[in-house]
Length: 325
Image 1 (cartoon, helix red, strand yellow):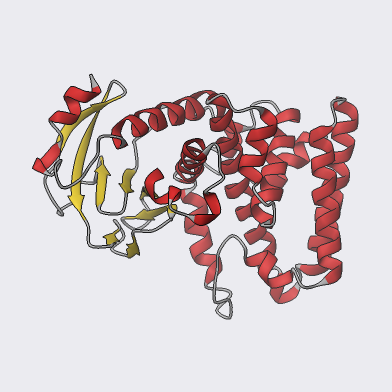
Image 2: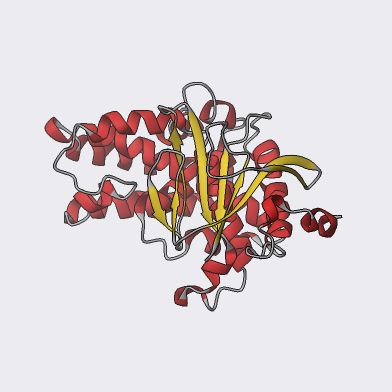
């Protein structure tokens, strides 16, 4: 059925834009995301964000906003669902819904537009990833790319956090690169800070490996105590703002990595290989500790998703505190 649909691809650009392999990949990606959203994150049906996928020469807009003016679009069925699709050639740069331009390189991210009221996702397609020298040996490349898309789609449910980060960033005008590595970049050179972080990080991963519930909870509780000790010592005075910043980034990156982990397992990757796929080098603190937090939370706190994706977006540390009670 897909071959028939592809033959009728939008805008007469099928010859210029080779989408033959793209739409089957999108079909599997959308199917995996729907399973993660409904079964793992337990998020009910919601409006789809504006999706932007691109390769070396073309960009595909999926369900663009009514403000979209870069070209016409047509209805296309992918995985049994109808989408508005636009296929357009690009010149190496792609304009985002928030009017920013990005290079058509190896980049995947979610953000907001319309004053923070709507979300969009921009994602490089697998062909771009395959050209990266660091990924030549990756045996699960398509699954990795899909897991990154699932990670970023999870962020489209974090608009409250995005809005709050915009406010917090203004309190740190001296910080040049305000992103999810800001705590690591600011405090990582401090030996005692790093020692505390490494201790809590190790305890969390010990808790993940522990099969006995009581011992798992005790290890997680010790990790929480060190997190609180570290924050009390370092996040005071002008640095107090970092406590909330850390909370937000651990929660956003942790929940999104946990969702990506679920997506890899849905595709048949083992727990061990899925863990390696998501952790990668493990060198980025908010990504790796955030992932550990949600693995622990999921094993100890039933229905945490209702709070993490509710109207107030409970933080990872709040959820951990309830999990170890």
